Image (cartoon, rainbow, N blue to C red; front, side, top):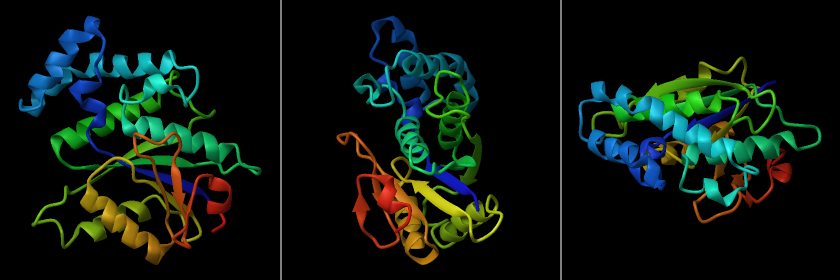
Length: 223
């Protein structure tokens, strides 16, 4: 059995408001401008954006460092906390792979790529060795995709599962509400375990198969 951590991806990794250093005004203005620009222009922001995230992780004292809140992506912050807590269990709950589940829109894919590159950097590393990181793209919720979206999520999960015995964990902090609602419904049927952390919370909340919420993964992992 292997443990797979899926992470729903929004656009917090590429938002301009997290850039609060006056020395990075140029990057902030670039991100503002690129919100409505052609996606082909986004590579211009990529190096500075990744450097910003990596610098925030390099200067942290721990994954609980308050300076990370609102200054890096929700996916990076919560995934780091979840991995650390899982690996601290006895025995440790090792994660074989982190899978970023993003919309197949240009900004969704770009945000996923930024998150993946930072996750694979030496500055991030909430656990060692850091699991491999993959990206899965699914349609953004819309009137056209709503009927097939659930199947797309299931296919994304099954592409990474070796067997039905594999434990599937979803970090649903980021991403679209419609996608996360479907994942919650699937969790009841397929036994996925869910994690979530609001920006006002210090630690993730873990939701087990018994539909109870826990502040620690220890009872949740066997629920």
